[in-house]
Length: 120
Image 1 (cartoon, helix red, strand yellow):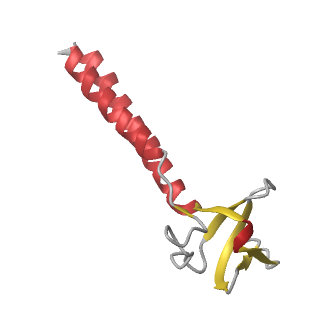
Image 2 (cartoon, rainbow, N blue to C red; image 1 turned 90 degrees about the vertical axis):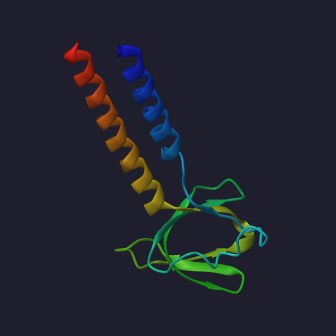
């Protein structure tokens, strides 16, 4: 009986761990994405090709060969990043939701394992 509960809980835990690694990325390759899926008013992390520091920005729009936004929700400094300098763009909100769901799921699995081990 113990082995089956442990097996089920380990499968659930691995499922949550794998799903926590999921995030949405957009790249400059037009075949993959042309940045048209970016939503105005949403925070994104832009990873640069030249190895410089990742830039967080509140996305506004795409204008020709540039992605335009602001430095943050409270910081209205305009940020203009050329598409040619972008390696990838990551959606922060989806990554945070997935990570939160994984933590809640792992806590649930731990509670099930703990209660089943005390029942015997």
